[in-house]
Length: 251
Ligand code: HEC
Image (cartoon, helix red, strand yellow):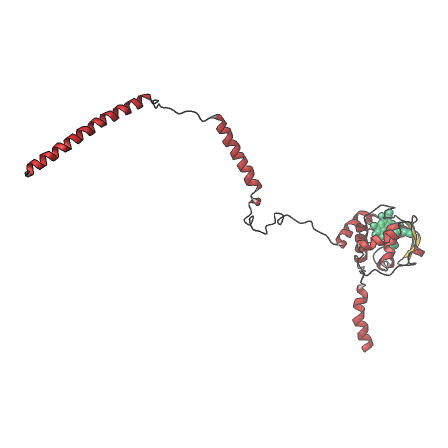
């Protein structure tokens, strides 16, 4: 039977043998490592330059990034990614001026030198347009004058004139149909004149009607064979007169 001491010493002997074995293995390992270390390149100080092509590459990348951002940013608008985003919404829209305002400009440029800015003309030379029966009557009368011109004696507001009114239609000074409609509308509604508006399609129809005519109109024929007043034309005078007329008959 083994004593306690004997047991201990035998255990110690086993432990020492194992440790010596391990030490031997360590030595072997170190040898191998040393060998490897010798074969490895030595680390050294300093740094190697970045390859030049990389610098160009990154510069190009930054440039492309900038271009991409600007082109796809939707103008840096906060609502650029909203489904109903309209990139042109903020752009100013071309303003459509009224026929009357357009006519005012045409009048200043084309008519005022003869008929004057106030529409009163020049006594004995250029007849007045303000308060003229030729102007505020049937719209076709003024259309005829502007499309083909006018000459020979004409009585305007009790005075006789005898001059030459140039044609502004395609055979004359060639104003556009829209400008002719605009200036007629202006003259019929300025300086206290209160007649209906004359539209571009109306002038289109009249121009077609008188395309074959090469001579200016004479005052005597201006009111001959007038067509019906086109649909669009509503006489404002008639509209106002109706209730008053009714009141008069009721009394
Ligand atoms: C070169 C001068 C001249 C210009 C420019 C001119 N007119 Fe006249 N206009 C006349 C003369 C002169 C008469 C009278 C013609 C006649 O005696 O037969 C006349 C007559 C008229 C009449 C009929 C008479 C009346 O007074 O109501 C109208 C309407 C008229 N012009 C409108 C215009 C309009 C609108 C313009 C511009 C688009 C214009 N004219 C440009 C010289 C001109």
